[in-house]
Structure formats: C-alpha cells, structure tokens
Image (cartoon, rainbow, N blue to C red; front, side):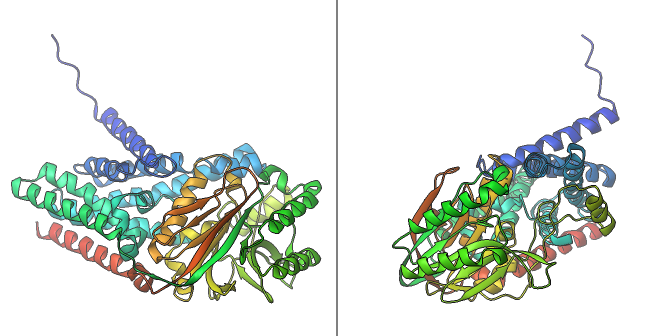
Length: 502
C-alpha cells in the first residue's frame, strides 16, 4: 500500500487558517443565547496551539482568520439593522459589515504577530504568562481604541460560570484573563513535565474552587426599604415604529402601559420610546408627568432631543420627577447612531439620499439621575458595554438603569449577547439593574447578576419588581481595570524578557 501523499505547505497553511476560522466561529457559541462557556477556554487554546510553531507572518494570518470567524459569526445581525430595517443598499451593508469584521480581525492578526515576535516558543512563560497577558491586553485595547468595540469580550460568556465570582474583584477583563490563563494552562500541562502538570492542576482547582466560593460573597449591602418599580415594554416593531401613522398609536400604548403601573414609585420606559423629538411633545410629556406624580411615581424614559442650536441631536434619558433632567448618551453605536467614516463620505451619503444616522455624543461628565429617592447610574443601549467608563457614576449611585432598543436586530442573538453585557455590569458593581427594552429583553437584575424578573419578549408588558439601595463598593468599582492591566503588562514583559534570555 502506498502511503498517503503529504500535504503541500500551501495547502497545509490554508487548512490551518480554515481551522482557525472555524474555532473563531465556534467561540460565538460560548456567548448567549447558547451559553456553552467552556468554549471560551477551548477555542482560544486551539489558536494558541496553532501559533506554537508559526512564523510571525503565519501567526498573523491565523489570528486574522480566527477574528474573522468570531466577528463574522458573532455580529452578522448587523445586516438586519443596516439593510432590513434601515434599508441601506445591499452592497453598502456588506461593505460596512466586512469592514468591521476585518478591523476586528486585525486585532487578532496583530496579537499573533506579537506572540511570534516577543514570546518564547514553549514553556511555562509562554503558556501561563505571555499568551494570556498579550491576548487580554489586545481585548482591552479593542474595547476603547477608535471609540472601542467591546462586544464579544471573552469574560461576558462567563457570567453564569464559576469564574463569575471573580467579576466584582476583577471586572470583565479579569474574567477574560482567567479564561485565557486556563487555556494556556491546558497547553502547558500537555507540553510540560510531571511537575508542571501537577502545579497546573492544583492552580486550576484553586481557581475554579475560589470562583465558586466567591459567588456567595456580598460585596455591597442593602440599605433602606425595597422600592416598587415598573418597567414598560411597548413592543412596537422597529420597521413600523417610525412610520408617521404609528405615532399616535404608540403614544396611546405607552400612556396605557404607564397608567397600568399603579403602585410603582418608579416607572422606566425604553430607549426612544416615542418616535418624536422630546422638544415637540412637551404637552404629552407634561401629561405623563402629572398623571404619574399624581400616583406618587417618577418616570425615567428614553427620548431623542435636539439641542437649542437645532443641529445637535442626542439619544437621551429623561427623568420626569418634581422637575426635568436629562442624561445624554456618551458612547454611540457605529453604523447605527453614527457612521465612522470621513466627512466627504457623509457628504456623499447626503447627496445620494442614503439612510444614515448621526447623533452627538453627550458630555463625559454627567451626574447620576435622581428618581424615586434613588440615584441611578444611567446608560443608553450599547454604552453599557463600557463598564469602566461608568464607574465614576456608579460610585455615586444606588442602582443602575439601562434603556435600550434591541428591536434593531430582530430575533437574532444580539439581544441575548447584550443582556449578558448588562448582567455583567450589575455583577461587577454589586448593584441592582433596571433594564427597559422596546420588545425585549426587559429585566430586573440583582446585585449578583441574576435575572430576578423578565418580561415576555415581543409583546407589550408591564414588568413589576423592586429595587433596593445598595451601599458600599465592590473592589472592581473602586479600582476599575488598572490592577488587571498592570498585572497583564508585567506578565507580558516578563515573558518577553524570558525570550531575550534564551
């Protein structure tokens, strides 16, 4: 029998890149709604293994295809918002999505090249220090560079795992780092001798056991009596919401839901609940304020408003209490609330009458919102993905509130991925979270990241529950990401120094 012919180097390379692409795509199954969180360890471990003997160029290619698989499979739902709902041409939709996926994949290409350049080819320093640290730093970097895109950070997939107990200490990037360390530990045990395998096994048991024990630790304490709240969900289909004929029915629906919230001291409406500028519905808002205050309730609602100059539009939260207060969204959604393109492209879009949105970002220094005797750290939709940016508000707040409209993404995984992000914010800070969504997922989340109450999706609902003032600060709320980042830099530097000494 003749032996099977050996693969050519070119074919072997492309088979490896295909495996990296599939590993990246499989990683999306670690996130909601699937929840196979062990893949957050196994899929990175596969890429780390592929990088072991790769040249700098090939490591970059493997990283690129892994990132393309992750973001191609993990953010395909942008097609729904850009093409299906916003009605952008198919060619423009695909161009924008491919550009985003390529940009995100470029981070992993850079990561691969850096690992091949800076790290030892084998040994504990590579697997247990250098690779986890560099990957974590890359993930953190893409979470803020060029406005940032923190979606699909590894730590979010672990919100229901034993490692979630570390979130109040280390934040989402700390959880990512622990998953990456475990991925490296698997390879270190495989490649190392008996002593290293025993050490890795003991450390892994301590890691997972410690996470399980920490899940029961209360980093914040309740203060005061529970406050009854109501979260409104209008369930207006996104492709109908902005039609002129639906404005009055939408107003009537939310007025009716608001009237059904009797007994609540605080009522939350979702993002841009009414498809009209707040400036143009002063009488409607005054009626809602008067009827709610007559029942002893304050209202927090998502609105769109225009500044006094008539040119700057804000995606905002409006608090109707004894007075009126606004919070303006600070982190805008690329391709939805603004297009990350040069000015001449915006001008061309206007000339071509193509649909696009362009909001103005709110001031970075804004105060907590006060309603129903509580101080809330507010976020609008996607900006709850920037956990460290919220900490200045959280330190002066009793609870969190998020208004969102994930109807832009239909029945895709986007809404479930987004809820995972929101739950992480409650878990990190030890605060209750009230989340109002247009058609789901409207929830009340407890200070351990647990969903206490949830409205049925895709139907009008009034979700009732209570929120409790939480006193004190979790370690992460005090320090933010800095301890994790300093440790990652130290490990990366140590591994690089080890490479120089070899």
